[in-house]
Length: 336
Image (tube, rainbow, N blue to C red; front, top):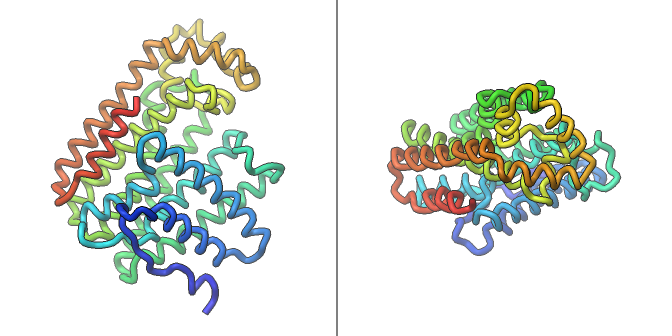
């Protein structure tokens, strides 16, 4: 039996276990080290996993939970309160998030400093390796039921295709001035929220939920993911630690501000946005302007709508123990 075959095939845990986050990290580490074919490959995967641990930790500190690691496990337990969660499920979700985030950073021309002097092609290879090898292997270890496994795979592929199309539209847009709000909202919904809803749908299927409950939980997750993305986008846009202005990212709050301007006013702002990629003084001036922008404040009303819709979908799901999932909505509502 190979190292990959003898890896963490069927471990389970509960979210209330104090060591759940550590167990998830250990499971992912064992999976990656078992599948890697060389020390060079292991080194790249270790750098990626350090990035994942940092992002998961920051998410828990900000809103009390990780939407990619914790949420699928919480949904599984809400549907099947007496069963333990197969760690492979939140592992697959977290790894998918990691791979797509790595590839998104490359597309934006900026990536975390811990990659050091690694060539962009190595970083891209790492993202592709995680998505094409580690994620399918993790999914394969969620269940021994071939029909259920095929259903999970179908959801995963559908989510990836929708996210990829959102990314295509994002990359194709030449700048914030080209974004109408409907376009910005469509791109937002096709990326992070689609991944969140896909893995929640898989969690519900794996836990044995009926079709109506699966649909409502997927809708709940999609809306929760949309609200979290808007919260994160606004924080990145306004925080000195945020990288969106440096990367020139087109987020919905920024698109709202640009599109509220008269056509004659947009070129000057777009020039400032370009200058902000290399000038901290310009970034600080833009942060003050955006923080006071009525258009940015109005755009954040989408977040409140998403949270309201998440609450409604969760009610319609009629779960035996929805408390934790309801708590995620309220935690996000209180995050600003």
